[in-house]
Image: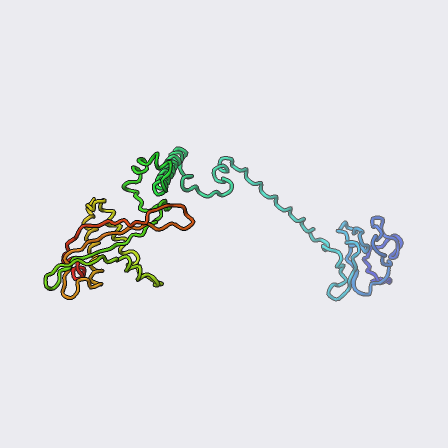
Length: 339
């Protein structure tokens, strides 16, 4: 230390410690400079080769001090200039490496793109659409043929069940050839001739009395008996409503106008009708005490339904009878035989 409180080795300008700086040193740019020659109370001075002025180069060409930094004195820092970073003699921090450029995307392969990426996802074809054009044409033709056959069949059935008209009269044989026997229909679309007659089924019997005498009974109106049973009955049975009518329709369908059988079911229809009338006669106790029914005779009496008062139609009110021959009664026709 010299008399001015500075190191004896400190560099002095031409005018002494408080003189002007060396020609190579630049004045401080960012702040007031310390008065030269003033003693440092907080710690030792900066080592030689460092400049006291911010932004000025050191005498030995060291790194510059960052402008605006301050010298901080203290026991830990030893008066070091914390604003100067990096410290003297340290290698400068390497510049950050530039971010690697992204690798260029490979050029799309036109062949693979056309085969592997068909575009929007399409549902697989099913049914007729999955067939080749040739088979699609064949399927369309087959479908058209089926549609034509179905339309012809529906038309033939319609004409068969429809009332008589110009088409049925002109092409009746062709319609019958198409319908019979596979597609025969037993119903009509409309009622061309609604029932305008009352058909009553009547029966009488020849009874052998206990003393051997034969006698004939009067006509029992079986249809009238069913009518009286149905009249006032809210829930009449099907037997009361349909048994006699169905039996008579069955007989008429299997016999001609002379009451001769026209098919294999003729005998069956006779037996069915005979058994029904025998059950009705037994219920009415026609044979009496100890008598036996030897034979029965059935007839149908048909009367026209009178027209309404406002109608001008003229019809006959005379009943028409169809009388069947006498049928001998067998054990199978009686109540015991039926069981």
